[in-house]
Image (spheres, rainbow, N blue to C red):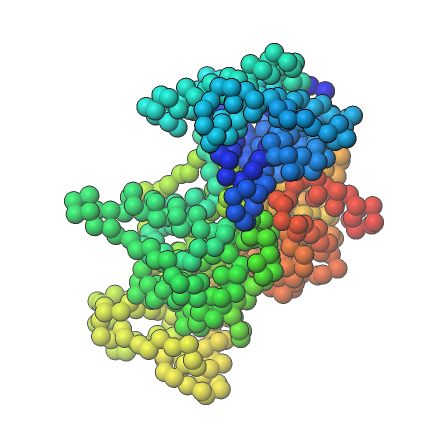
Length: 600
């Protein structure tokens, strides 16, 4: 069946062969044609030479989740050929380098197999081993362009933008693309029944990954200090922040840098630096992943009890232990919510895409200072390192950072006595001061028992008074955090509830279920503690399907703990193999639950 702007392409290559540039060129060309597109990268955590895959989903409807089918496989890695062949959906196509013979035992009768002598063509037209490897990958761009009817003028323009005045690189890349393009036209029916046709649905949009968006958001939020220890998949967040600051945070007259980025010796040191900078009045943050959260827990408990603002970005990956560092999960929800020993609870934000990584970066600093507590932003590898199409960022130039209850010199001068941990306003949030502002504002910051006046104590009632007041602050936080994204299709007694990157797959799944006359309401939680809107949403339904990407139903557990959700109505749909969630998993899970009587 002929399809337009609904195709999934996967390219299997070897890590370190320059395929990222070729794959990016394909994705960008489709985007420039005005067609929504999303890219998912599956790469190894080890050294160069291992298998890597890149998946391009062309979706005229603008869906952003991974697809549950594969139409075209470009199999450039002989080591994974059998696996790549098996992934192609019936009726699809496989493209391979036919320079070398291929076992007929690997053929499939239900797909079309196209052999293109990519290596031979590049060996005949280019000199040097490295150049031939690179050009072979560029040549498959030409093959795909011919089969899908991509605009070569757009591809040429992209090469010119990439290489600028390096004409020889533009010409050599276009030569390789033409080799593949002309061969495909001479030997296959082009375009395929499944093709790409120009639209106008990308205007006002950009393609960006979540780590870059979060790094930009931190700069716009006014962050001036970043401390981190490199860890996959969060390192590029600090790289982006650093790059933006070098461009925009340097005084033009003096060349003085107005930011500080520190690579610490480990994650424990990194969060310690952040707390020190925040205590001194800077907006400071650290990006990490699950293993880093484990190491930071003790300092996070100190920040909670001593009430020091801090922002942590947790770009989640698979666990436990080292797990699979380059695969995605949502398995840090509980460890972040209750990081550290004792009665400790932390504010969490859950971005669903790079757009929210930007906006929630700004919100996280405002909330951390307003609430005087750590705020953890839980992204994941799928959001952080993959290519998403989102509306272009907007910014209000009138934005003023919310520094919370900070007393200045004039206010302190008028006071008889300053007490650091006294709840003056009844919202659980005391007033704080910054070092050096005024002698009256001095106090002893401690992680040990202290009274509401800031004095050391081991008195039972004085200690309990402080930790009870922290619960008042917790309830204040509940009312000011971002509300849930709630959608009612009609009055239904069943619903889907998810978090973070689960949004893309769930939104698409709801459309597919509605097409089968299965209508469900929808809730995406955006923050913890959960608001009354989440509590009320669950209460209105007889069954709520909880879609999350971990084995142990951590979101479901948190809902029961925080809003006393009835566990009998919470049905878990758990996806945790490290590959991004797709709509098919949600659809199948809901339909299976309905068949077993778990729906109204």
